[in-house]
Image (cartoon, rainbow, N blue to C red; front, side, top):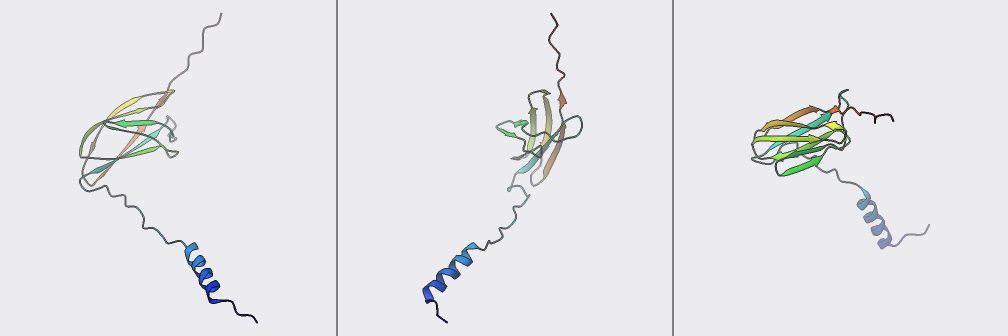
Length: 120
């Protein structure tokens, strides 16, 4: 039986070790020191989560993901939250954010009724 050169074994071991994945520590849901988290979940009239909804607070804006949520890390205080999506009636909601806490809003948007054009 033929022996492999030591450098080949070393390279193979390095490749094998490099391919193993190290588990990353999970991100904490805790807000940064002195801030709070505002989670906004947007649903339709049937309670289904709505993606691609614009959610804005003063100085920030975001779009909901496929799960229908947007998240903001904010300084403590009261905020006016604007929620809008084409084809739905927009909403403005006031929310309070406390340091070290998560405030969750569940906002329901009402679909606008389309009026057919008049017949000629």
